[in-house]
Length: 288
Image (cartoon, rainbow, N blue to C red; front, top):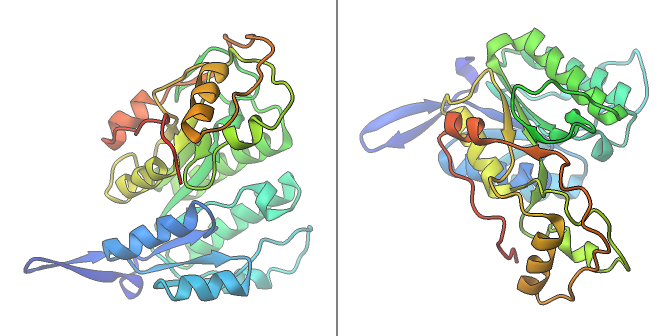
């Protein structure tokens, strides 16, 4: 790792050197991750999409800078000159948030990764998605081959492979199921719909704080070089889960008109949690 970018944290009488971490995408997941890393003693840099967000994060000790992936194919690579120096990078920019086509998104993420490597970054963590499994049904483990059926899913698989080509065993892929946490829970929108189908489909969700715990574990050396799943061990049916969550939130019950989908995908993350040595928290929780 590049000594110039390392930060120090005192633990008792011992001073330990912590890597500088860049979080690309300091949004709903990235900002609290950055805050946690600052508390742990890391120097944290990263990217945001607006000056207002930059100012807010600067006040929290995060050296954020306004940076966005190009939306079109271009020979102009001047945007790469704004990439901050770091030892470890967390890439957390989904194509929908980037507002660009999936193919261009993949090319630009890999260009970002190449720039990071040239600047001395020695480890990369990519926030991917379990949508890379497309319409695969039944239980899905970390060894299940991806079968993406959307442009976004295909782009994520391309990025995953490209990062392993660049960083080899120093690349880690985290395939996330649906994210829930503070101010984000699908039950709030589902109860507003007049009717819902596929009530029997298994729920695949992961809490925001569990994702942050997983990234911290990787920074401590666990799971580096792996493709990991992050999904709760709980997989109730949609109708069971969202009916119970509506009650917890004091909302009207959702209207499921059928119980189809019971054989749809069920993300098994037990191997990943064992590698990371973390235990996921319950998804039957109210987030305020």
